[in-house]
Length: 128
Image (spheres, rainbow, N blue to C red):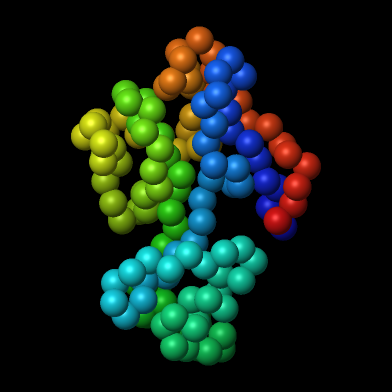
């Protein structure tokens, strides 16, 4: 089971969502993204797509409709949003910048809000 981490600036109140920086989603028949929470990602995906767990590995529809969203931040305007980095461009929906980084990439980078400290990752002691 993955450890839950905290990604934050020690000098100001900037913080990215806690967790491991990603979450799984599945696209339903109407094109909406449905969050598939850990540890039940595959069960949720099967329910949405309409396949059994046995069929899952051979199901091409599963591969095309399931993705991973990454929590990201624009270092130009500090806007935070989630994006599937394999399927979408790294472009901030607020300011249009392509200076977008996920939680793990922000570790050791200058805080986009205060600019005084670097973003750190801290183990919360929680396991999901």
